[in-house]
Amino acid sequence: MWGKFGGRLLKISLKQQGFTLLELLAVTLILSILLTAVTLNYAGVQEEATDNLVQADLHVIAAALNFYRLKNQKYPVELKTLETRGYLEELPDDKFRMNQPYLYQVKAGAATYLLWSVGANGQDDHGGADDIVLGKQ
Image (cartoon, rainbow, N blue to C red):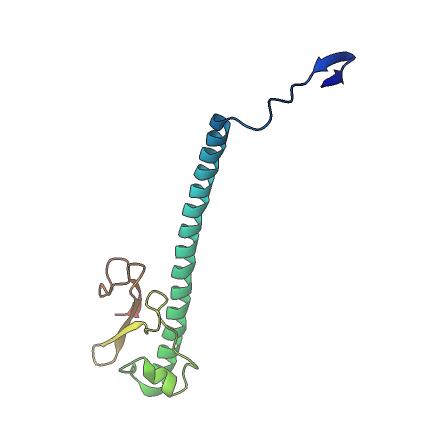
């Protein structure tokens, strides 16, 4: 087959169609590296979003706890009281332990409390390690 380029006739080979194995491997490698980078960034963003959601939940519960204390001069013994007495419409679940409530402990004669989530490792470290803690001590 002949083609015209800049006034010259050039012979175009029909035999050389497609890509070589080396070219395909290079493209596959580049795509794999890009996919890995995107996946790692997404995982970090997702974990940060979950942490922020947990922080928001803890602050909502803390506000209900403080309102309960204003009315009753002490914090409730358990979080479920906030829901049963109407301080919260629904008690949110710990985002790191599906269908399980956040952890709560009343201290010093119901004058202070500790409220926490187990964090990304899913284990109760009693407010340590990666637990997300909110409370008045």
